[in-house]
Length: 249
Image (cartoon, rainbow, N blue to C red):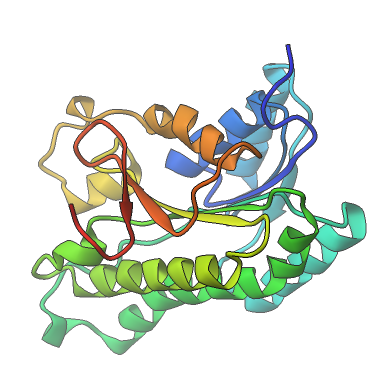
């Protein structure tokens, strides 16, 4: 039986844990060659061990910080040299940043969250756009959050970073509207991840769905058959629903 991502090249950032790890495994299971980027070599190797143990092709491991912009530029060049194209880019890597009144946020903390959650994704688009243009069905998926429009008190840096990420995704969708590239944003809703545990330490993680609950729909979005662009897929109410970016339901 043919797998929906057979022979496609997929870059996943934040691939060592949580949603990124779950999606790296799901993409590999559907036949993609996974380029897994995260900071920790050991966690990447453990991911690759699991991919291979399941009988899938070994991943390409990229131990790299999302703040290493020169490294992100080199990644684009390396993908071009080896494959000449990129079919799927899942921009998942992110940090929570401080939960604090805006007036108490330190400049370094503000700069860090924008560097990882926004600027790194722009740098990757800058590096990867020529490769996505070479694909017959380039797919870009950014992990957003309801923080982009709820603007919850004390979550200022994270709120701003996700709003900016949605603007980045929407802009790129408009710029590529006449091409085979499709750009989607995902609001995963409350999901059992380390970031969620850090944000909500009093919450019982067992009451939340695991990252794998996103896998089937994100594989569908990554596939050549997906036709929507410039939209957000919202999982926050359990059942995924499409909405226009910047327009809460």
